[in-house]
Image (cartoon, rainbow, N blue to C red):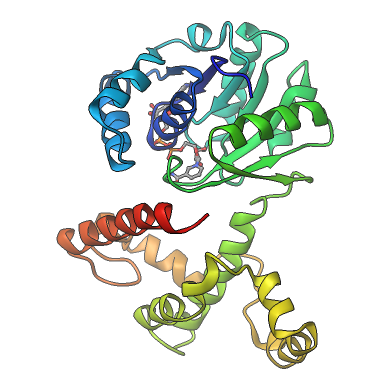
Length: 307
Ligand SMILES: NC(=O)c1ccc[n+]([C@@H]2O[C@H](COP(=O)([O-])OP(=O)(O)OC[C@H]3O[C@@H](n4cnc5c(N)ncnc54)[C@H](O)[C@@H]3O)[C@@H](O)[C@H]2O)c1
């Protein structure tokens, strides 16, 4: 893979800082833009802290930071970019306006990607003049630690642009996966939220409490999920057993096609989770910090264990 390519990251928040450091660490140049003074002022320190978590020393961090330029204007960030990653807030109108501006200033050959979590790429980039270079790259949080990036093609995405993006991400140490149809939630969030729908339903229907749901997952199939996907598991136990289980349980699983009223009520009551001190469960600030530290420590350890 060619090095010293010019990349642009639009939005220097949680995802943008991690995408930028991943690309710079892989030997590419990055211009990262954000209209917010606070985000621009803090992004170098946040990147440095994340690189430390990844085990980089001061010398390496200085070299990586030299590859990253911080800008306020989208035009400056994208004017000579080969690849553009948009990581601005999850608002359709904002993303559409950002891509109109990107297209105005980026080279015609640049591949343009949105990091939207669930919104259709077709809708975000439907107004572009050159839609063949538009696609989705759904990175996962923290983007510098979770290997997966879903590369989403629309009906009009040129396969060569998707190939180029796959190559760039692979070279940067990511595990890109192609999503061939632009469906809401792509692959990962469809799977994740199918599980969350059932998890909420179990609590809502008094079958168990929230702690029991989390304990069951963490102490059972959650343990093997990182090395055994569900379809590998179905082949491992046999598709015949899988069919028998589905015949006896699927009829009773949650199947509503809208969010749970129980979840809506939590939000209405201001029980927003760790940030408000209570969601499905009560959380002290210390308990919330402990969870974040536990996740970071676990992901760091996994880096050394998993292929
Ligand atoms: N946080 C996650 O876990 C996660 C995971 C996967 C995907 N995403 C998606 O990534 C995107 C970014 O999420 P985030 O968590 O980094 O949000 P964030 O709020 O941390 O960062 C967004 C940044 O965009 C900046 N911004 C606002 N308007 C802008 C503009 N016009 N141009 C450029 N930058 C602008 C903000 O100042 C902010 O710094 C969203 O689409 C989100 O859905 C988030």
